[in-house]
Length: 368
Ligand code: ATP
Image 1 (cartoon, helix red, strand yellow):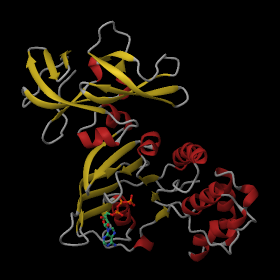
Image 2 (image 1 turned 45 degrees about the horizontal axis):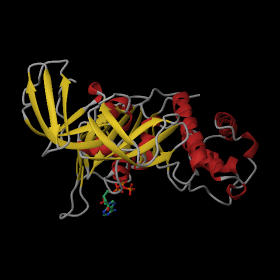
Image 3 (image 1 turned 45 degrees about the vertical axis):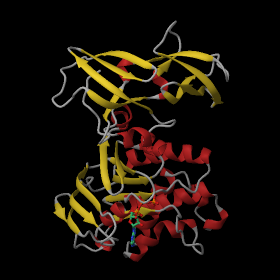
Image 4 (image 1 turned 90 degrees about the vertical axis):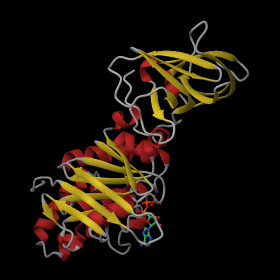
């Protein structure tokens, strides 16, 4: 059904400042590839929605260029950008039936009735809402309203689809179902899509690539696995992943193809599998380890820990540990026998460790 080829969107040195005394938003260089599902994620107020609104044409950048397929569109008004948006509150017209909500935009553009009907058929089939077409929004559930809002957006064959927290109003179960459906739908229509969320799990599960933003600055752009496995800063390491990455402050000494990390209560040797990068020096660092990379089967282990709390989360358990190194959280299989007050020997998976510069929090490119 899609007629046009997907569009590449580029933001080049784009800034936005609302007030002089507040930190501005700066997107130095971001290209959203044709047909890609790219997610902007970050804490509240970091600038996700503003960035998306600038792409839409609802907000004017203070400086910089926004391009659709190589064409600068800064001065193109929103109605001429061929973008479609879905918001957290679906903003359906309450007095119109689903079918009229779906084709509202087409009608306003003067698309003939027969074509509108064909498009309604296509989109309602795609979103499984064929049986709801005669109902008013108040007569359908939140999840169904969400589908109608999506349908109304994609029926116009937009060049760019912008989704601002579209799943936030749904309950947890429906959210999970809709996450998968949205990704499937996006693949089917192949439209370049920007998704805004503050939910790291949503970003991780749905995106081709993720842009992590903090305080108006892009912290990292990458595929979900890249961001999870090799976060480029302490902020990304702790924002992405739940429970978050454990952080330990200590010192490293690099000697040949090995480094030694030491802090109060722990001293571990880590083999280096690649050349030591320039600038990687002996001195204070923050070591990061994901909860699933702490194991307990070694006789001696790297350090002992007292179990403070065990949280049951279905197939897994989160084990809260008190160690000399600090508080840590481990993730274990539900069958692993562990209870509060147990004493365990912890071992860190050497190949999964992350090291960050102590002051800046930036990742050190040490190949472990
Ligand atoms: P949230 O997840 O809470 O929606 P966000 O990451 O989408 O947050 P934005 O809505 O883009 O954040 O806001 C970024 C910053 O710009 C915030 O500090 C906000 O207060 C400010 N801001 C946004 N819109 C305006 C406006 N119209 N006037 C003044 N300041 C604004």
